[in-house]
Length: 101
Image 1: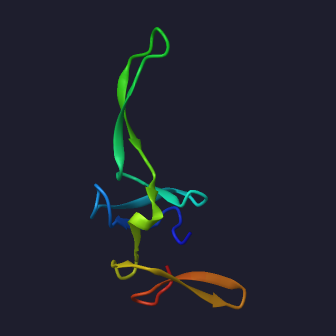
Image 2: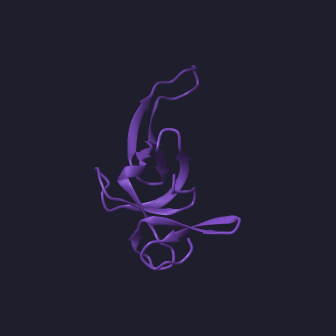
């Protein structure tokens, strides 16, 4: 997976198309990422104990990696990710400006 926690991404498909946000969590085995403020749903939660109140909570559900694209921190454009290998280090590179991410 080419996205990491803390990256800024833009949604390119779905109900939140065009929104941007930071990656909170990556789920590499499922091929999904959780982006803050994007793909939010409401859920009604019933009271479980006598003193607790029933409430409506907002959940952020994961998005498929195919539905988001990285925004380069240097050139501020949505871009694909490439890799540059130098001896023993492997770094991510912006495909548009060729600078390290």
